[in-house]
Length: 300
Image (cartoon, rainbow, N blue to C red):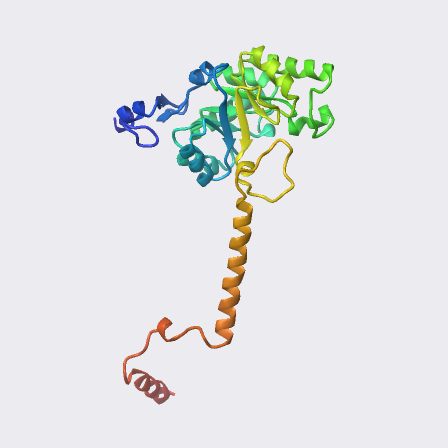
């Protein structure tokens, strides 16, 4: 009965309601609280732009939730589910779509199984690069699915490599057709990557799917950017569509320099006889060492 009283984050129902959180049960059977459900997300379409990120660590996930990020994507590996589970625990009240590996499902049945595996770990939905046939199988099984259109990196050989897609009329119509196919398959959302901003704005008006924009301008329903880009985890060069709000890589460089300096000073102190000092050692009681030497030398 205790699981009915609080959510994953241990929030009593009254407090959850005051914070605008919804009480839910996951497909895996766990009670919890979330800022959004699929229904609430879909109700936001056309009303306001949501913000989304993909954290790589529990610390990033916790910070994103505290800051008020609307939704998150989380990379999920069914062979090693603990990293995704740790991110879920770090941000227990934020809607999360677990990004599942493309090559992990080769049949509709495997797609359903993979979706169930993600939901059992705590996903609220899955994000995939599957065909509409696989998406239809998963959604029929009750798994909310976000598809992927535009530049799909793992399928970029079909669209000419890692480049913008949809800059010609034929490509624009193709992107629109791909999104409508995902809609017809039962998806609730689609990540749209690196297409012209004006094109996404027009497509968003013509689909019931929530459109998550990454490198596709501000005309979508969700603005998506990786946490590593937002935080500046790595030095330049950066993707054109990204913006760095912090430069954590500089702090990492400073920390590494401090590590090197610490080890260097330790080496110098040992070689110079400065470590260990009197304050770092334990002294024997008076007379004990003399008695020890006498006892040892007497035995030999």
